Each structure stands twice: as C-alpha cells, then as structure tokens.
Image (cartoon, rainbow over all chains, first blue to last red; front, top):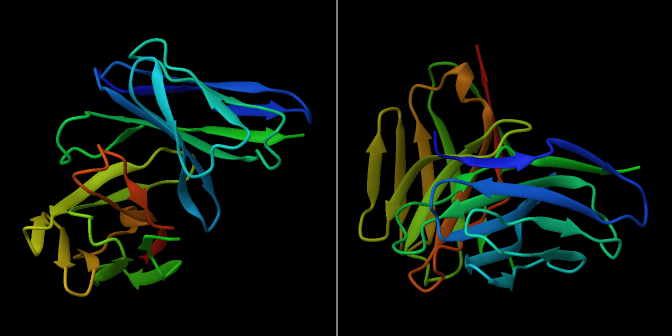
Length: 114
Length: 113
C-alpha cells in the first residue's frame, strides 16, 4: 500500500538538543511538506519541497531545518534554536502538477521537550 | 495574516441532525478548496473538495457549498453520526501556489448520540 510513514510516533527532547523527525513516502509524489499543529492554531507550514535538493521556507521556519536528498524522504530537524518545539508535527506529500489532489498526510509525530 | 479562517472553534450537534461547518477566506487568488477530517493523534484525511468554477459538490452525506462573492464556503453533513466527531480543517490553494495549501484553524465537531 502506498502512503507516508512518519517516525517516531512520540519523541522526547531535552533542552538544547537537536532531534530529527523522519518522513518517507512511496506515492511517487514530487512535493513534500512539514506542518506543525498547536491547539487552536490549526496547521502551520514549516518547510516544503517541490523537487529533490530544493526546499523553501514556510511561515514558521525559524529553528527548523530540512533536507531532500531523495524523492521519497524529507526529514525535519528541530534545532535548539526553536524556542517552543513541543507540538504535533505532520508530514504530507502531493503531486506537483494539478491542484485537485490535495495532500496525503502521515500519522504525525508528537514532540515533547522535557 | 490568516488567509483562511474558521471562526467557530467548536460545534455540537445531535445524531441525525445537520452539521454545518463554515470557512471564510480573504485571498481572491484561491481557486480550489478542500475539507480535511482529523482524529486525535492521527494525520488529517481528505474529505471533499470544490473548484471555484462550481458552487456545490456532493459526496454521500457530505456537501460543500462555495459562495465566491462572499469568499465563504461551508461543509454540510447530513445526517450527522457519532463517528463524524473530529476536527475539520478547511484548506485552499491557487494555481500559482504549486500545490501548497493554506489551512484554517479547524473546528471541533462533536456529534452526540
């Protein structure tokens, strides 16, 4: 079955540590996205990538970094510069051409700073 | 600047009745709109969509209405079922956004048996 796999499901980070969230898709989608969900604030775009080795900042990119070395993979690193990293992180992918498809989402990673 | 707004944080309805979830947008370049449903600790799943060339799209119990002049869309669920209880997100994109969606804040729907 095609889909998006996010891992781990739960992640705990100490203050000052960098952590990396994994996102893999086998849908052959060109575009991939990272969103953050906080209570009452909906989904906010962190980074997105439309092609391998290229990515763009979203609305809240500060304190985050990404890479896109393979079409299937789009890992997100939450750095120590992110002041409030506790949130639910969602990865998504979509075809690049056309607009009628929307996103396919992963099941999310819950990150907690301890 | 919140380009897609869902002004009702929550909605409570009785099983069998109609649920109406509302969404407003400000960007006149948006020409495609989607609704997603999300359960706790899961990723959102696609529910229904509508192109700006239409004013209504129906899929089973779910109907989306688009009023372009008012920049407003709504999702109707008839009849509502307890399994519909979830967070509903409205999203929009334009032909120039290359697939990038802008989401609303979400509305928590609770359907009581």
